[in-house]
Amino acid sequence: MKANFVGARINCDYCYMIIMTVLLALLPLSGRSTTAFMTLVLVYTISGLAWGFLAEYAGIVSLGQQLFIGLGMYGLIIFGKLGLSLAPAVALTALLNVALAAALAPPIFKLRGVYLAIGTWILASIFEVSFAYWQYVGAATGATYLPALIIGQRTVYYLLLALEVGVSLILYHLYNSKLGLGIKATGANEAVARERGVNVPLVKLIVFMISAVISSLVGSLYLLYTAYVTPEMAFTVSWIIALIFVNLIGGRGRIFGALLGSIIFTAVVYATSGIAGFSLLIEGLIVLAAWFLIYNGIWPLIARKIEVRPPL
Image (cartoon, rainbow, N blue to C red; front, side, top):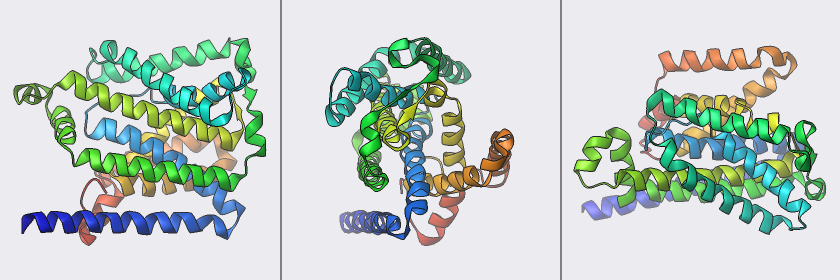
């Protein structure tokens, strides 16, 4: 009976995913402005999922996730100059980001709490400064990825949608797997997880690498949307502000929560575009209000009423 209930729940979860995917697939038909808006929504949703899963379940609060997003963008510039076409450049960039995450994990995870957060932010800042002086990729003035100029906006949107669906399925199954139990145990209490036989360093490494490859792919597809990149744009701390906003407002570690939070964040960005100097202040005030008023985010409140369970 229990097995049947679990199976029914999984099938129901897939129904929710399918409905959401169909709705998102139909949105570009309403016009270019909607496509542009929802393209940004998907960028923040996918990167928010990667960061939120890292923070909520594995207990790794990184303020340097923009490192992998930025390298995902610059990877296309670098490999494009070497003559690689789009698909191999995206794949090779993602592979190198995974390798970088594996190399950074041992020293990074020796840090704890606020020191880990600051350490990851410093790493991203080092890359931002380095790229600002690297003439090969245009230094501080940036560079244009020419193939992006001939790729339609709707094509980029559907590529992002495909990535969002893939990431959602991966995180859904990871959450419900044996490894997922180890991840949640690690995030809850590392000492207890070790006592229960969880290989904590390996679990954190795997989650960090998954987050890195997702962020890399988001960065690469985002460059197809913008066509132009600068170090300040690629490695800016604004990425982290966006990811924190998305997860706190939408719902930490929740798939649909990331989507809802991204819609709200993108709407705030659009609404404050005319007062750019105050946009970060407004976003920060909204996050603070959410922290005190709806600590778990908006989506969990809705999900509880319609009986949608984590990680959806």
